[in-house]
Image (cartoon, rainbow, N blue to C red):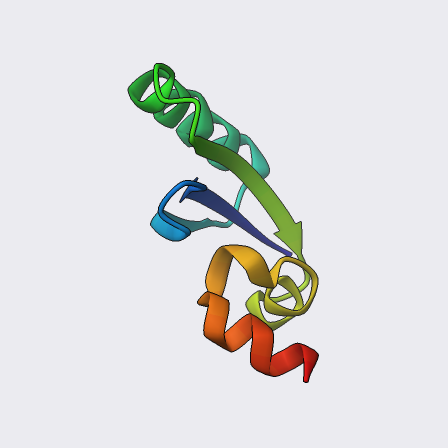
Length: 76
């Protein structure tokens, strides 16, 4: 199982930070730090995602990891 901290700027449509953790506890601790850092910016989304692999995350949460062009190409 991989646990990934994602910090995503919705307004800019880009990933600000992505870090993998072996432990969900460590990922959540990093999330709380990131939330304090970006807490005043309502455009920034801070999440911890868990999956068997990063490729699974790309399949289920592609909007965090792919550009708009890449997402559109997937839909075509």
